[in-house]
Length: 447
Image (cartoon, rainbow, N blue to C red; front, side, top):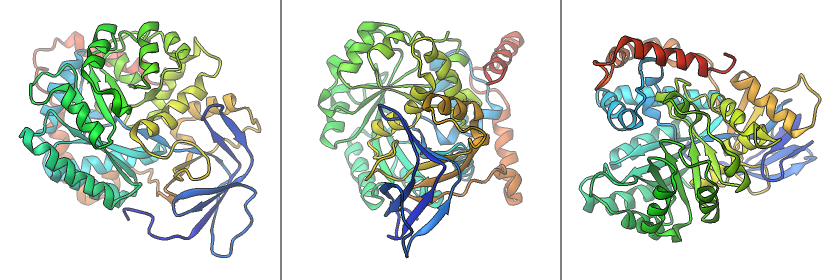
């Protein structure tokens, strides 16, 4: 199903409702879902045609992880990242993915989607450069009934003259899947290949009313000012994907980004694994900067576990505010949904019914901050149900390759391709690999 094809009503009976828009709120009540959207909140009487879902859990907005690359799902267990951001993102990962067949990529994506739903995530992102890639991932997402966010890689799309045609065809796919599929544009700044100028990329986003995602080396003042001089701010839906968080402690930088309503996506485990110190987010908190938490699967070893990211993000925020857990959850629900242009991420009438049920029955507290802490500490073990567009998503807690025997051979071949170090790893001293292993062990929650 690519869309909610029926108009039947669904009533979700809950323990309570928790949302993280400003201000955050806990309230008693149930939800009435019609045509994939929340149509009423509170005391919902029985409707003759309604399907009633009894959920004696706390219901909150589902997570969005827009920066997770689905094809990297198997790199979690068999891939070792170097401390170099540039080497990891643009050499090692593409080199490893180039070894995968179409069948293996599909299996990897399916496993990634399973991990997303297991952690209560409703939206999967994917970087593409050809129409075939976009069509394939759209079909897979439709099968799993998750939302999809496709980012057209402007640097990898060749020839340059074909970009408008590819974009037109993918936008047609978006029209076929209204409310399910969104398209955005992606490029790196500063550009290493003169295939498309920054101004043309921004103009393309503005003309087609698309979100624009820009990967930057850091958040230094010089980099941001240079970017803003070359970008058309009329698009007003711009997200930065920094490889390093250098500059996020600058009041001048964060105020500039906040004034221009620019989103910043951070990947806590990725930054820590690459050797960065925990950043000082005081300036970002003071400027009310729109930060969205994301994840890079191949770097974090988290297998799309957004709770691991939230664990560290809460630690970063706790020094500067009293509601660190609430802010962290807002950065994983409402803010990334807004950056992608989805009407999701909060509990209100006419919002898409992307919902997550969390089992916190061991407490009778109604304090939002306390409940937010419990959600992060409980991790995916507390996830009980996931609804996307009001439709329940089956959460399988059995690993895909253990559940489907027919895929064992293909998965074994996939592992064999990724066990060996990727390009540039053969010269690594043994002691460096040991240091990275120990660093990764320290990053896991509870260690």
